[in-house]
Length: 196
Image (cartoon, rainbow, N blue to C red):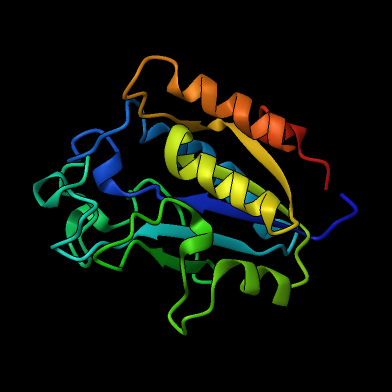
């Protein structure tokens, strides 16, 4: 791998996994798969970022306040915690998104760290030129993170074995994949395909 890479794990939180308030079918399985990527990036000394939905209790994102989603990932709630199967070490950088009460913030690039630094600025400060993206959900936060990564000038690789979709309408995830590929995203199908 010629460009400095980073792993971006998107929203692998309890509320998006089976038993959560906005569960993605088999969403928990991405945690186990992503652990293999975490191990590879850690062994290579490459940065790892995890994004999380971090909603206030009252937000226009939620159906009860005019949005389309059930209440999920409320700040400091059990549902907002990362799934327990996901192994995130102490060096993983956490980006929180969706904290504004009137903005949906699907993209990881809407997130900020504890100091208020956005994802694009953080990645650039680390010399990152290429991001590998996995997590939840293919047709919303993954899609928007990938598209925004490309808009910010990063090369983007989608981790096909480490994503799952919501599919509110049948085929949403397939259409999201097509849109990401058309925009310039690449893909790998398994951790063994990484070349670094």
